[in-house]
Image 1 (cartoon, rainbow, N blue to C red):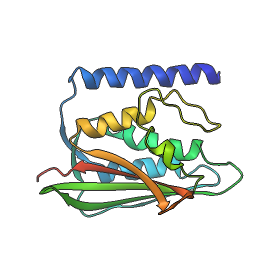
Image 2: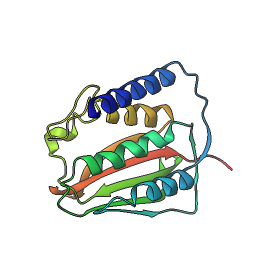
Image 3: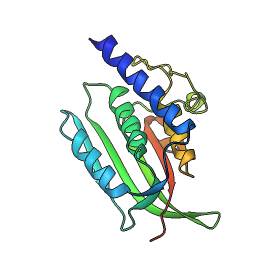
Image 4: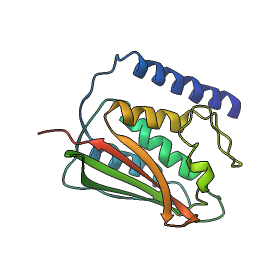
Length: 181
């Protein structure tokens, strides 16, 4: 059953990548606050897993219906790669940012999990790179996240939650273009 579920997720990710590459998805205004609130509610019920979300006043980004995939992948990776015998806290913070004269909504997802060593961070968003944890993946999730962010005109980066100490957790920063009202 686990193998079937894993295969289904892999096929789903490949199909989403195909839709992106074919340019059949049109960019539009998406309410990121609604997306993140819904995902907070979805994952907050898990025992030993706490998801907090702090929205900003600005909620509209340029994206499409696949925007959920960015944050589902990041939240599920935090859960999947953290020990089950230790409480996990996932903080989602949303703020406005300006970069190169452009307005972005910056979404930070950080956790107090095991973190990611520096030599792993460089490879994370590479296609088919599954990492070196006990929770093996197919290496498409974070590649999909990066591809989506870039297709929306944004970007993603990863860093230590506590600068200089990767063992204290990870922080993913997703920059998405703010939509004009």
